[in-house]
Image 1 (tube, rainbow, N blue to C red):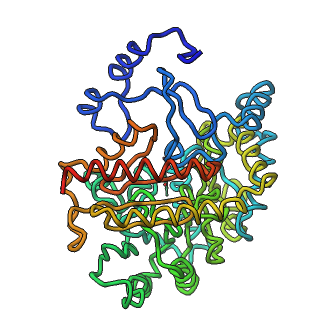
Image 2: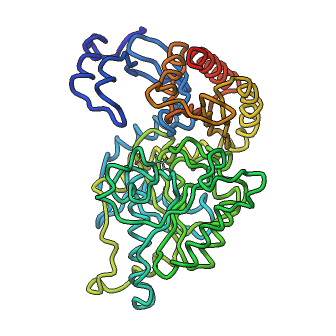
Image 3: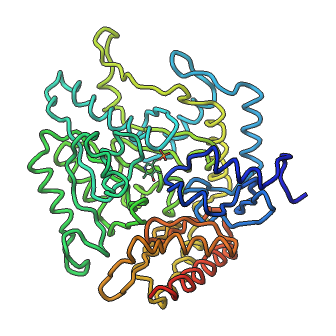
Length: 461
Ligand SMILES: *Cc1c(COP(=O)(O)O)cnc(C)c1O
């Protein structure tokens, strides 16, 4: 048995895919002319298409998969929960897995985060954090802080694709067109050291971007509700890694200026950076934390926004006082998704997954060194198992490849021919291996990526 478990011919599926589906973040005019694998199965760190071709999952199925595909423990948890009940609402009712998971999340996240609000996607987890932070200040101390209505975000930020999340985003390519629909935010410079927005060099900048942030806070703190940040790594911007100490400084400044800190751990949470949560690296406790992607081990859509008793308590009162948080999604706290998340966290704890990551991270670090020989490699950024390799036309001037060359896309098509699925962000090649990958598999990921960059860029420089 190599083929599909359905009786539909692969050629027909390809035709129907192009006929019926509008793919996300995809120029469909080009997509319909390309051959794209149709995934039919997953096995550990491999994806298998309808023709039986096997690919290493080098982006963890868009940054979600943790323990590999088709892990028996997670599959079983899902099956067992479906046999009991597939869905029951959290509006006015409770269900078993959502309770157990909330308790577990409070135990494993930084201390002080002790209330869990569920939703279904990273973007909704962010929307919820923004609305909670806003309403908190409206209600705290009888409305003394009602002017605190604005948000500080970072340049190059990405927090999801709903309008509120886009408002705190900073990627011009994705967000520019929607500008008239967005609420205004105060934007601080991204700590993008390779292309410093302040035009400085990391060796002697004294972290000037933090000073800019402080200026912004000093001027506006009376009108700022919260600052939102992707801790340690701005993922969608091209794996921009913040310098050590940056996150802690942000936390200190937020505390000093009475601004809530929202940590969007949607991408960096669940082991990606080498700790369970990125905030742990700098001993930071945010006021709100957003989780999604890896929460269910990458099996089902589920998200959570965690916050402190301080925030939660500001929403307490009699019904007629209208302090309730009027927000919810139909599938909030879905029991099957919560059961998958519990099984995933159980694997983390039983197999001490985090401890096992350190040698893999070190292997990646060493393996990436030789990429510096490639003339098109301008910058290599790594934090844990998150890697961005920024390709440039001219290493000395850091001149980017022009967009019409579509270099990133060409590299990943080449990698696909050699059995590796990865996805670029513009000219940045992203490696986001499944946490469960072995060192041998990581070596294959590196080898194929190296060769694909070499072959593709040799023709272009
Ligand atoms: C992916 C991502 C989101 C959005 O998550 P969705 O589930 O796609 O809505 C939000 N924030 C960060 C940091 C992300 O990487």
